Length: 508
Image 1 (cartoon, rainbow, N blue to C red):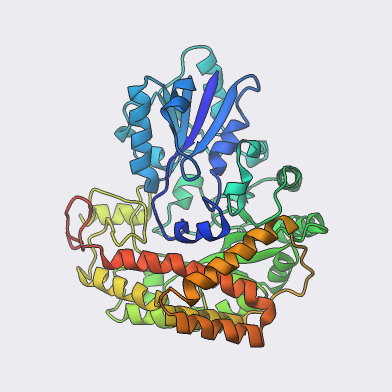
Image 2 (image 1 turned 90 degrees about the vertical axis):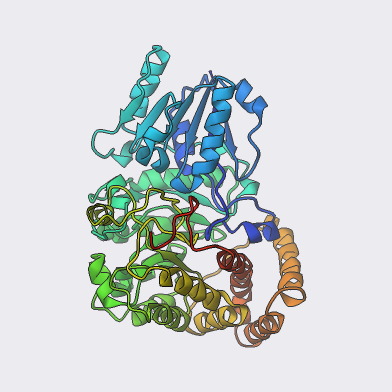
């Protein structure tokens, strides 16, 4: 059987980095880990190809070759996924679909032959058996949450590694917290399920064997949810594995609780972690109480951020505006917090209500939901009718413009670098990437130093880093490059009307 695995195109979002990937001659940030995992279940006698539409085009020839198309998508990929499915219907190629988009909106895709609801690992073997028997079901739903220790090593061999900025592995699923806007527990539950240390090392060994030598994202929603196991088992094993492989670094997602555990921070740095994404959400205590973000309450969040940065970890922060308890001053509060914290990469989004969450249920009862959910919380639209009305969108757009104005953005890089304590470890550089990054550096200088907005502010940052923190110049220039993309996102926001795609106003 010929199978094409299709990952639909992602629109230009905060995390797509489409406007800077070209500088380092890459096409996408990371590959579709879910599809690569599913590929490992397929019989070895089948012929399989992956088409990541963020890297290459899906052609009719690909589909004519296929006996079956398997597609996975998030809500933000809805438009591209529909086009792929329509094209498959036109060519009479059956489609199997899974992922968050189809789990939430299965009724919107009647032409899909088979849809997986929830995590596929527990029911995919059954599907394969019934498919080969000629009688696949329309829906397959996981019974409970699957044991990740049965999860196979993803088939990374399907990738063109050179087209990606980083690879991904996953250690755990599930989160013990109860944030009412978050759909992680809806999708993956509160019980934290983990892979074994040999599993993770086996995945890393496979990546290393096929030539990967750069950043690896540990794609957990809360990496430290099982803190004892991470500290006592996983991190020491990762530190040992990484010896002689210092060109590889790790990034992940965690919570602000990391600030409370100096041993955990030290172990993460020793294991090669350099970046953590943390959902800070808001400096407004009443809004934290509203969304049940208990782990962030009654804390000095600014001090916590600095503690983590001084440990040698860069924080990328998630922030939200649009809570019912947000005061009119929230936009200035948010700007001041982010600027003073030195969180360079600050994703500020409008509050969204995802199906299955407690927030969605509450707002549904209050008749404050609009019908469409875009899935991109930084697109300037929300499916919630907010208490603020139109003030929310205008304040949000103003906040983004302030945050990513070149002068303020470069100031924030400097604030971060003043506080940041990089790990004192030897770094091995993969010599194969040196020419590419040398070309990227020259392109960056041309883009920001001579033709971009804020050229004077850029050169001030460049000279300050060169004179006071020369060892941090590559990091500073990487952050400066990110600003190109973020500025584009801000420019897009400034052109957005205060309506949704169907013309509904923000206030409903």
